[in-house]
Image (tube, rainbow, N blue to C red):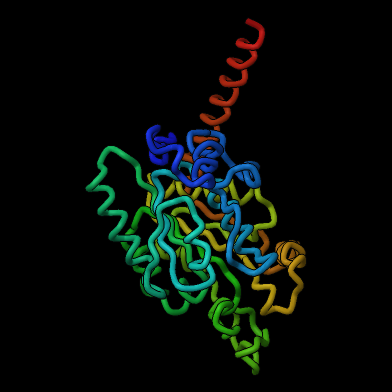
Length: 303
């Protein structure tokens, strides 16, 4: 990684907005060990947003941005929903697609980037809510998996349509009564992680965003696997605290309760045997790199 993509010309530096100067000076771009611990110190990791106070999606966005292996070579594809309110604040290239067709857009984008930049690995990441991923966009989602497209799909699972009043979605839990679903959900939550696995995804994870180190690890795994093997899928529980009747500070507790033993979002991870060996090798390489860097720093300190 490098900061070349956001570098400011010396001749223009003094007239650039202070916010942009700060972002360039403090950006985690170029830091091979960037991660969730950089949140709060780096401006490009969503310093502020337009979501509701305490929204778990804002937490998820920050963890995802901080965990991208190569942010300057990453393009997000989003869809209409609460997520589209955050993308204007994101310091990563992004495209706003029509509601539900984000995986179709990402398919063409990934192929075009491969042709345009044959010597550079360009990561494409789809990020959309449960309505766009599972209901309106399910066909586009599954067809991209059937074709083996090499990008990662992330679903922010609110378990309802959060930004249009609380309608029922396919991922809503059975029996739940929402503002605009007064009779309650009549069928079980669609098992999209299982569908993803059966549709050709090489890596699948289902979880909440209450544990940042786990989110970081899963996201990096998914993107690295997508580069080498094909489609990967991550389903993150990001409850809409307004629609489920919680206070702004209760989102984290809601996620922790949902991932407890027997909960709806107990951490699940699936990978093919090939991927398992691939990630094992990547982990070993990363340990060796960090060990060598530590020894080098120690040697420099004693020189």
